[in-house]
Image (cartoon, rainbow, N blue to C red; front, side):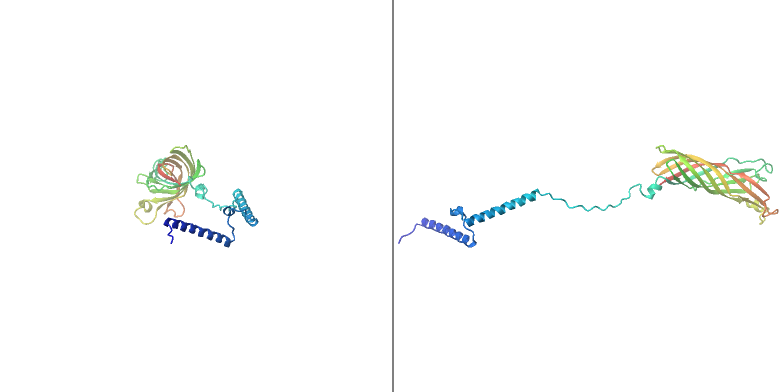
Length: 302
């Protein structure tokens, strides 16, 4: 019995393994219908093999053409849908910006009064009436002199203000009482806008006063009685107004002002003496209400 060398046996096993793999490969190729490559078989391809190869090459060429066409193709973007425009209100478009901002102002003042005509003759001789030959002003320093202004342009506008003042009658016995006048002043104004914090202004207009008389009881009733003996009934008054001043800007929208105004107005009055008549005046009189008003104010501009 011949004994095989172990190394030779191992080589034989390896050769046998590769032979089996080669046979399995050929069988698989025949079962799938794909012939073994000619390069491996070492033979010239048959007509059917060439047809298969040409078909594969044609398909590959068509694929390459498609890829080239896709690369060179121009893709048109889809049309954009027009965006919806939402109206946005800009500064200056609103009613406030057009008609209120920098146009409407509101303010108030503290005023003092100085009558220009306070004497007339002597008692019962050239006096205003009877024993009343003098007058004086009564002051009210409360800041109740409100005003409202509207600028039509940066230089011109209109305004309305509230005014009140008192004229006290005097004689050697202390007088008969005090006239009280109050009402609106309607005016036009002009101002000099110069780009600084100081803006001079002037105004001209008319005052419409309601007038009443606050009588002293001892004059009204006389001798301590309860029957009205003496009575003044004043008419409402209209006066001419001219004034001016200086606005001084403190901060934006807020300013202070120095103010001077002259008012020319008369106080017409009917005097009733009850023993004579309660419906027909015994006498009439005119008291001068001409005066200067001066003071300080604050103004806010919207």
